[in-house]
Image (tube, rainbow, N blue to C red; front, side, top):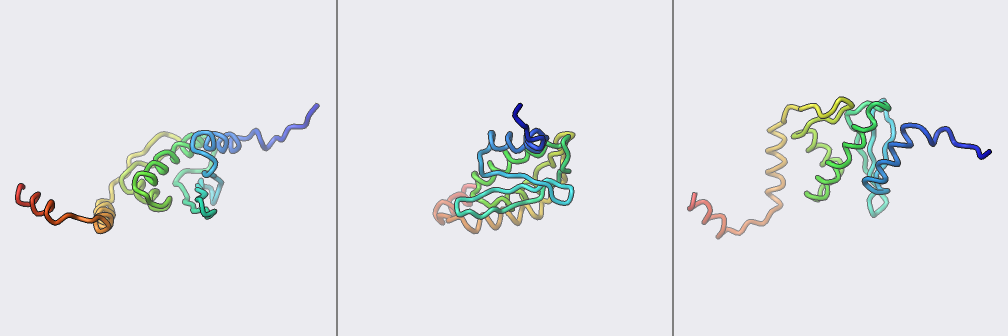
Length: 136
């Protein structure tokens, strides 16, 4: 009878397989200080990471897996780092827990600062900008 690896059948292995299936091979999770730590491997081989505010338990495996989708979407949509995407999710979104999404208080100062930092990177056509001001 073939030997089976008992460790391969744990909730952690199931979680990692689910993450790989849903988000690709570049995403990894592990435990750090009782919390879930998320890694994203980039093309250059670097592995930035963030610690999620989710306890590392089997009952939170769905919450851990569900955290990746919004982070990946925000990273792709805004061309930002994992750390910045996580920071923005904490500012304006809820916290994903084993009990579902918990509403978080919005840090409007941080949201405004982030907007202004993004706005500085945009090129503005003065003609369009002035016509908008005149119209309104």
